[in-house]
Length: 445
Ligand code: DOR
Image (cartoon, rainbow, N blue to C red; front, side):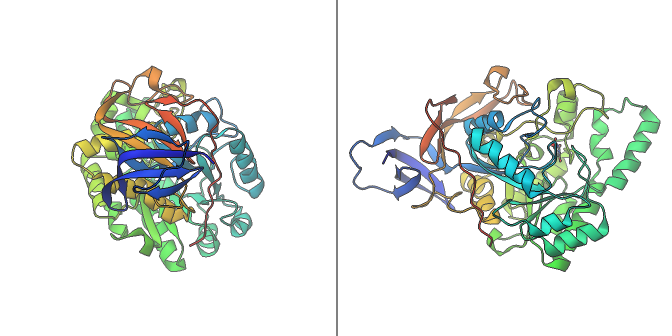
């Protein structure tokens, strides 16, 4: 049995920060607090550091199978570990798309061979796979992803009967991308008439408009209420949509909301600096929208913070407005973004942990993870609030090789990531030795 003592940490967990030692035996937390330490224990002194549960990112696009020129499960999960993310849930808009149980099994096979964080996969909905959706359980998938607005990949679900069927019959949580495509198509047409192909990137949030978001989010919430379905609306971007959600603890909710780190960070002024690098769907909107999203994290209308990590190559991103793909790589820097915003007084450490670790675990019924509790898996990240992290191209681990944060110095650094009891990253460098990522175990709730 291996044993590891994380000594003198400030443990951030379940609304409190407590000075404690954490003893790990094999892959689980054995004890939080002082007591006898087995012979042969390796000790890591975490004086001055805060110890958080490893982040659980409930929305990433690692592009396997089929789009491996952009990313692979292996490359992106290594970047995730560096950033303190120890589990993620991967999206189905791959090639082929993940729309049946055979495709889910293939993803699990790829992940077992090379993914460096604990993983789960969404089944993708289409207008024609309702029978498959009905059969899928938490043994197969963390949830079903429904593109109620078209985005990267061609997975739009817009057939009213199919949507009714999904919300009536899915046995796993329903996660939706909400943007009303007919309105977006009208807006695109108007902008094309005016600018031809040379639409300025600043128009993106006007084309993928706040109205398009609201029309679709309100439709999803209405469907969920009528069917009593378990709905998680992904990546909210507008103040107005927030009126669709209730404040309060996640355990009591059937309808939940997610925000992504880039929508909490950037606003419309960022397009002038970063151009199509920050083109994403739903679009980054106004500073007023961003302020409302930040407030909704605090009042618990928003339940989860994730990334929508969506890597594309720089060559792809350099194309014109209509051809540049949407999405940006984020998973290596999501915790650093949140720590930097903590330094600005935006969120407490306990709030960050609640939204980025506890709540995804509760929402998806992830067994024994997401909290620092005795008996739980030791997925942990130690951070140094006094440190800084400068992002440059050499620090970026994504296969696409770039980050929108190059040149940024975040306040905060990630000192140590522990995955299933094993130290895997230390001071930004991978620790040599075997890593043991696992498939996540989802328990229906
Ligand atoms: O910006 C986005 N990129 N939004 C999505 O919904 C998909 C994602 C991707 O896969 O590139």
